[in-house]
Image 1 (cartoon, rainbow, N blue to C red):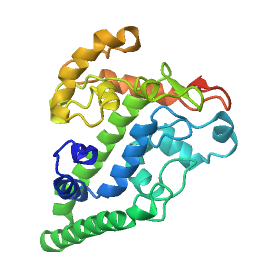
Image 2 (image 1 turned 90 degrees about the horizontal axis):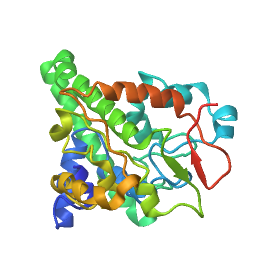
Image 3 (image 1 turned 60 degrees about the vertical axis):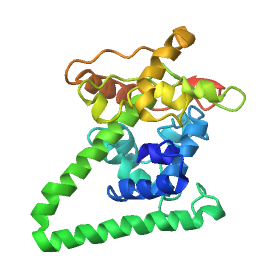
Image 4 (image 1 turned 90 degrees about the vertical axis):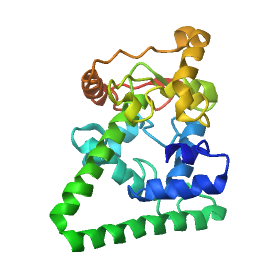
Length: 272
């Protein structure tokens, strides 16, 4: 589904859209809404104002405008692990709209029908789930779909957060931001046994440099870009069988990465 959104699942746009709706609709994610916001993220990653995912808030916004519930969902465990569902419906702090709403400023007027199609696909999945619940009971639905779905979304939040949030990487404003600088402000992570399960998305730097590259080529491509990038590539800490070190990394970043300076072309996360 992720590759379909990037157009790398197939050279056929219709096939990408069909498979994307099946894959995303099944997990209650509006395919075109996500695809367009994800495109915005890739086209602006590392830009404080223009990025769409896990971008930092300014110090003044954090201290004077951001309410306690928003801070809890953004910065505190375990609430941060439900951030994806909230993001789909309400986007992130400082931005308005919904991935289900064609009038959201994420979308062009010409994309209205696409957003409605994807919302319809999610509603169809809700109807299927309701039918399953009526036929087999709520406990069956809870055990076979709702709990696995919550686990999936929590894992997605953790993975995307870790790739885009660390006190060591810079964020940029107009005049300093470039596409390459944004791509290099992502981080690769080693997920141990889970690397192949989620299609090696831990090799995230090359994914941001070449987002149309299919997932099955990104590990090999990463080995080629390492010597070219040299010191600009941050080598990830190697994982054991299970990536327990990432729990430490996430807790550390949640504490350290709260906001950035109100001014400055190149800034870093801080917490005081």
